[in-house]
Length: 136
Image 1 (cartoon, helix red, strand yellow):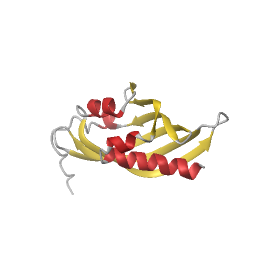
Image 2 (cartoon, rainbow, N blue to C red):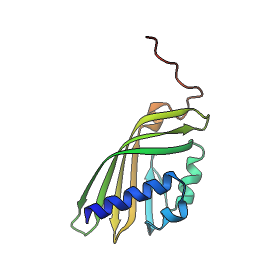
Image 3 (tube, helix red, strand yellow):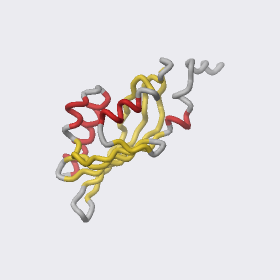
């Protein structure tokens, strides 16, 4: 049960990274709520992607760890933890930015996604040039 939920979340994240939105949408319940920093809630992948265009060119995740548990109401909660990498709107690559995603699944579909990450705090979104290499 938990392994299937983790597999579904992982597949969803991979599809999102590849921008296979139509296929990714099949993992979402019609009433899905996706909340991203700084507290913006989206109800569709189209809304989410439109908002991301002003933040970065592309982003993906190094999914380091998953944890899952069942709630008393029958929902399954899956946490995905790791780091983000990608390219900001200025074409500057970034990596190593922490993230934590919390998913709630009912009947195999994602009904909630809550996202926490350090993109804004890290400064990678506003960087207009690659950081200089540290002197030896």
